Length: 206
Ligand SMILES: C[S@@+](CC[C@H](N)C(=O)[O-])C[C@H]1O[C@@H](n2cnc3c(N)ncnc32)[C@H](O)[C@@H]1O
Figure 1: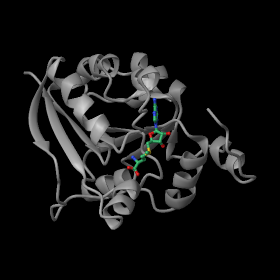
Figure 2 (figure 1 turned 90 degrees about the vertical axis):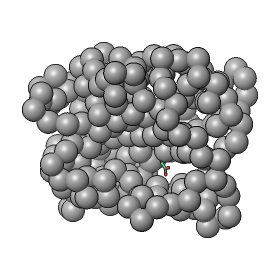
Figure 3 (figure 1 turned 180 degrees about the vertical axis):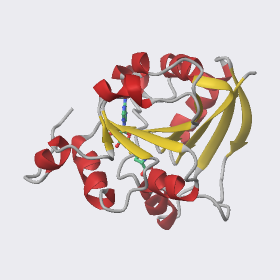
């Protein structure tokens, strides 16, 4: 991955704060009496920040691999973040072993990178190998909420879900925002450009 660097990034990412969680914190972080929601690829973090604010009794955990965008999210939300919001800087592939089985209530995949070339498909966050991991860490009845502007990724993802253990609940080929929806940074940009937004919800069978 190309490394993008800004002078202020490293001190922000390296200094201890309540918002940024580290892999080594995870064993003692998760508590059985709380509910956890996960966003993978949270980008600049606005979606998860709003979710956490609206739902203070549940825990919102975001994972993002790009150091620059995590640093931007920290810079934006460090002073105002509610206690139930947690960011992790990592490739999600390095964290599955740290998650308890059948634990998360839901996983949000918002505008995941489309990786259009066939040889890149395995990096897609909806690729079958990822769906198998999500199936392990989601509770029975837990859901995946997947949104994209990319038709090719969406069509392929429907097939990935159909061939998985998940049950597809909803497929929207032109999803309109509802009152309580939170648009992500990419979604806001794509909607302003007049792009169609696709959405799929899938459930882990109980
Ligand atoms: C197109 S951006 C969308 C950002 C945000 N969800 C939004 O909708 O505004 C996709 C993000 O997913 C992150 N990402 C891709 N693969 C990832 C992985 N394996 N683990 C963690 N983050 C990942 C990328 O770094 C990128 O920031």
